Image (cartoon, rainbow, N blue to C red; front, top):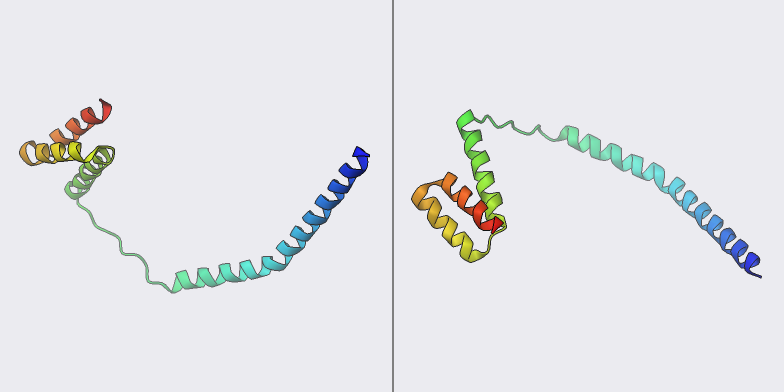
Length: 104
């Protein structure tokens, strides 16, 4: 009795997979058509402008990213402390203090 129910389930699975395969065959051409449209639209768009960053500006952006990254994990009261340190002692000191606060 268990064998017939297992066989029935396997037959049901085979039918379901066959239906899925047929659905993918039907939708495949539509997807490739849409992909071609998207490719053409991208070609028509104007190219992105390339930012010309000086070494100094890039370094400042990296430091800002480190600062923002350390601030993310802090509570609002801790952020206020770090902002005060940044105003008084600079961004490097603020990053170090924020790392200490985050680890404790």
